[in-house]
Amino acid sequence: MDTVGSEASLQNAVDRLNVVRREIAKVIVGQDDVVESVLICLLSGGHVLLEGVPGLGKTTLLRTLARTMQLKYSRIQFTPDLMPADIVGSMIMENDDRGHKVLRFQYGPIFANLVLADEINRATPKTQSALLEAMQERTVTSGTTTHELEAPFLVMATQNPIEMEGTYPLPEAQLDRFLMKIVVGYPTRDELSRIVERTISRDEEIPNAVMDRDAIRDVRAVCRQVLVAPHVQDFAIRLVMATQCDQKEAHEMSRKYVRFGASPRGAQALVECGRVHALMRGRFNLAVEDILHVAPGVLRHRIILNFDAHADGQTPETILQAILKTVSAQSSVA
Image (cartoon, rainbow, N blue to C red; front, side, top):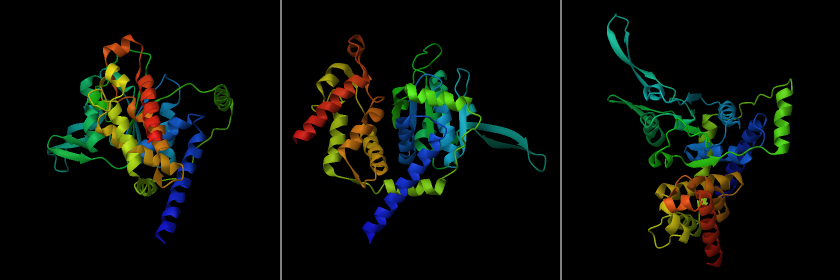
């Protein structure tokens, strides 16, 4: 009976996620991998960093996701003059019923389920650091009081890769707190044609609310039931260690071009994201293919290159491709 119940819960979770993706597709044309990655981060309890030029629908995606899942959404436009209090909130003084002066905490836009940190690299490091506690601990501390953030909580940050003037690169410690970094590309010819058709159409597609917080919690519980076999777990560990230049398991390109490899968070993220990906494919077991699918998004921002890599034209993408190919071949032989 337990197996039947598990299969029923698996199918129910898959059906719910397919409905969500169909509703998002009413607004977002294409970008299937991006939509899937954002859903993976939401169900894994992590955050996502999107990198792409303006106009690719990054903001629209999160707003549509909030509508389909009945979640509170807020948008923070990061600018050089943005202060930490503009994000987390601040203490304000007001009069109570008796006319006495009292301090009250004014909640900032971080108190939402889905938070869009638009062009996060435009804010100063001081303001960027205001997100660290919220992203890691799911809390905001003001004075001596700690405020809990309501679950689910997802920060989706965007950054423009082509404009460097007036930007502040994210520190490695903050990059590591993002579960995945997704590179958003241009739409295809057919997708661009559909986008233009929707623009000139009189009828506006409005996505329906098909899930809520309780449903998200149920699907998350099903994700945690996905089994991880020892050999798949070992594959994820070997992938991470292959990026670490000072390990004996390091890939030759890591020894030559990598300054710092992926941290233990990388191994955790590979497994957690892979489990959600397996669930989306209707399986209750994590496979090596799931790890390979999520590995670029999970590891590309966790590899810090040295000067030789930049001089030789190497990127995290080229190094990851070589590592994935080598570790996969070793796994097939084993």
